[in-house]
Length: 634
Image 1 (cartoon, rainbow, N blue to C red):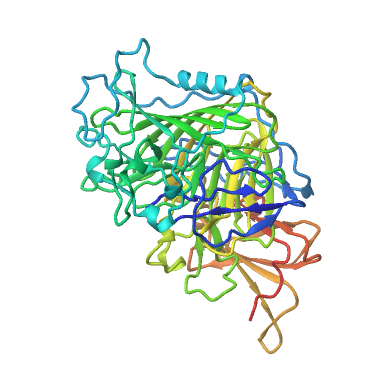
Image 2: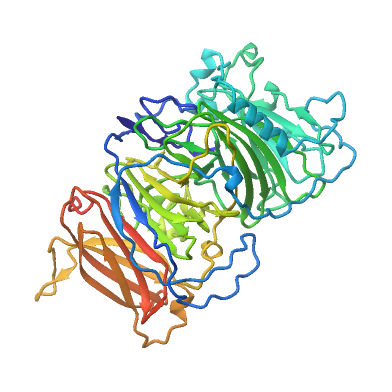
């Protein structure tokens, strides 16, 4: 059984991948990219899930937290001391979710209301007029009803309507088709939000329906107009463009400056993928509406947003609301996204999901990113870029108040890790390496890629944050996936209600809302044993250098004793564990030397810094993938 990973597209199309990950035995329900090198395949037949049990009960508080500063993600935290978790390989279990009637979501933050006022002057790009004002304004309940009705019906696969000549477009040619800024939707209105669109083409061969909801709650379809696009040097017969539709849309907003009103703030394109940025950011990782059976031998299913309703913002509005209807062979869903753009862009998500039938792994709030190599896993080939990734780790805040940091790997074999916990407080894929010198790339600027934090609203019950790491030979593949998998899956036709807040940010300290120190970097080395001649020699061990920084370390006396509580599974043996001050960072440096018993098996490790009985840091949770201890090529 083989698993093909997502193909990334760089350039003007802001979507993490046009080739969506799919098992060869399954069916891809999203668009794919043309004219790219063959996609590497990964064997999933014997893919083992490493299950990491988070300690179920909190230890006594370690560091008294300061009151959190007001910000979009209002979470008050109290760091705790935790014991090492037991790690053991288990077989993948069917993912399950908590039925909606059992959920106890916290009330969502009220959002800005759309001002009721006479309709503004129509823009150059017009929505179809509605014959009469509706009896009731359009609301989330209407999308819910559609999703419920769809779930009770047999799945109907959408029919492609794209002429063969347009399906055969090479990527470079499709990229030449650009939406005209002078045709942006709402450009003649006083709202700071405008809309742009993506045309069908290449493997985007199924149109998505896009509607405008006006200030009265009336729905107006936005019709595709070929004249809204510039086709560059392409010689396309106008007859081929008749009757086509949109592949997706983008939200334009002056996120960086009022002098740049057409900055892209969000983009929806391909299956249920979307990307968001805030001030000073460039597109990086993606989010999805739903993930089904990711990395299972049965084949991954890709739910897709089929219809959108975008609420027309009021004059001087600071947020915008998008409704979406999701459909796939085994699931349907209703979604409400409320975008709050700014220095950080915050997105409040409300969804109601229905299953047509049981699924193997139900991924809630899925994130997709790229990790090729980094400080913990240097490039196997010569490259002037020290690191190359959109995210360098998975951060988690558990229900028992433990903070964990899992550095990412580009493994030689597919790896799936499940962090079991109850009522998670948050998780996300972060980019902690924030300096230009981490990457030295003048074109892609990985230091400007956002971190994305998921903050559950209400109790999510028992489940696991799961991390999927897929081998990739280059940076054009999205090879990292993370999501929440509930233990209890709803029965077909029974709704699953989920709410969460997404924070897209460059400032990781806004996410790490605790005085506990965090991991600034993880580095790996070999041959770190000095002999009598002071020359470094190899004893078969691997050395890890872990730098911790943060308030809990900065406030310590210079002569304070700091130690590391370290744990390894039975496949690893810790032969050195030492901590010393790092005067450059103002933090502490942990040095671990590890020997591996069986190179064909992974080594799981955990480490936290402490002073006496007081925990000072988050938990560094690292996996040495199988065979990663082999000597690097000289």
